[in-house]
Length: 238
Image (cartoon, rainbow, N blue to C red; front, side, top):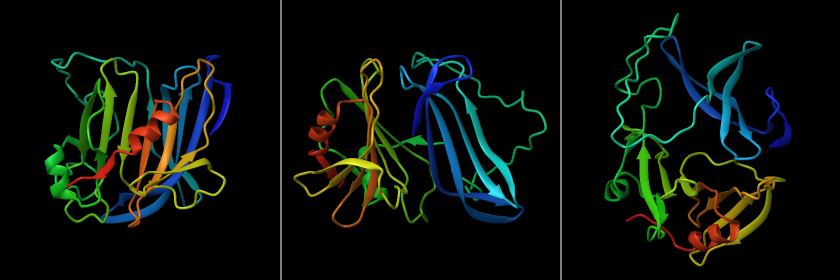
């Protein structure tokens, strides 16, 4: 992560760059390649401003995804939004109902269903007071080596959260961490280096490693000591 640095509109920003494998369709073939993701955060609030995912192919930079956040608000649960694509021009929409070319949009998953889908999922034993748990996962993952899911514990005011995310954690953590913590159950939390925000808001990110080799990410806006306390109640879903 680099920053803080001046943004295009004068605001102070942080820039986070990561790399990881992605799969995408080229004709009738599914290609696996390393992609670089650049995420821009507001240095004051840590809200995401923009993100961009690119790959290098045949000496050219190819954009896989570009996102700019123009509005950030929470809508009432009953709000209905028409997610139409009629304003897109020059884009061919491909129906991928069988998930042959990529992940489908995540769906809400119940705790008992998560246990039935994977033996390597971890959740907190109990939902912390004042927080609500939502688990989501892309459908049709029957043949995947790693079951992808995100479990988010969010406070009632939506300002603080703790998220558990499965998937490919960074392979080597050399030079990336500033603290290691081991829970009573033997889970090792490798906390990634952090930067203090001017408003005092904290953000903790850790790679969690289980004794059997299972790894997942833990991200939270809660103070690091509170994250450690909650991590002590992490338990494999049964």
